[in-house]
Length: 415
Image 1 (tube, rainbow, N blue to C red):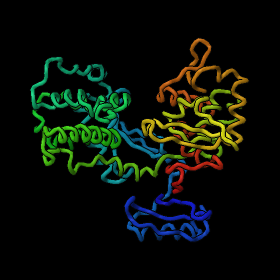
Image 2 (cartoon, rainbow, N blue to C red):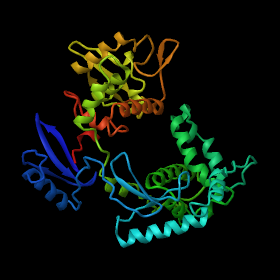
Image 3 (tube, rainbow, N blue to C red):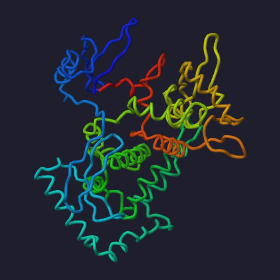
Image 4 (cartoon, rainbow, N blue to C red):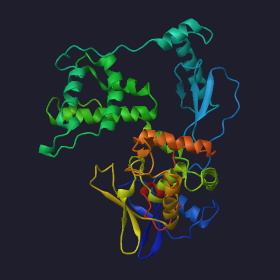
């Protein structure tokens, strides 16, 4: 990780950067993936010189060591990181254990989590109490007008603001519908215990406890959503900047990302399995090739259609106004010859039809658009049927294989 490359006067240059604003150190040795090579040693020395810690990108999932400890379970994330939890039984909460497996701190954390869970839900054999706890539904938020100055009051005003809904008259774009849904799901659970209290009662200590009760990713997303809302409150002069309770708080999301080593990319074997299972002319293959040859995000790949193909004097080009930029930035990628073959094979299987997109759901004999989450779930299903091990993340692995295309920033990271 921390290894990047660019092109200077037609020459490929490798360099190391630890921070976005920090300095860079060029690596002049010949590129090699071998750990004993001069390139690897130079990369490691450069990372240390910049104050970083050399970490290799995980190339295969971690393997779980055998354990007979009761209530201790494990799983492997989409990044290949092994994670340990304490869970009394199915459908009860899983308590994440972050300490190093086998250490004294790990064993103490497991003991404490087991005691805490048994105190809340009873022993795993106490089926009646456990079922009652899991089936209890959270009470809906009050429908009465919120008290002025309360957290729910600010949340109501925030959702009615131009920052949330947008206002073209003042060039305020607002939030995308998917972002609104996500932030509503993050903040509303916080309102059940804190919504009727004055906003001043939402101290750093309260927020820190709320963040600890979530996974690093969930905590990071909640913190980001709160900071956006509080930023609006400050701009509207509801509170002073010094009253922001999120100042100085960390979710642990960045640390968890560093420790995980990043997403596990698809291997050549994974891609070969997928191609063998889904030949040219199938929708599954076309979904793969769209991601593989265009480098588009899921939101753009899910709506990719004939309107995004434009012929120039020399070649066919893919041009998509990206969802991430809200249409302000256009991604342009040449159509690779293998991608052209895949597109040509698709109509023979009756996939393209006359709809506005190439892949999606079948409606009255035509392909209709799907939202990006449904599109991703459909592709994930195809990947699992093909026997690929890393079904959730493909774009980064595929981008590095597409020739004559400008790689994305994530694809340029090699370690």
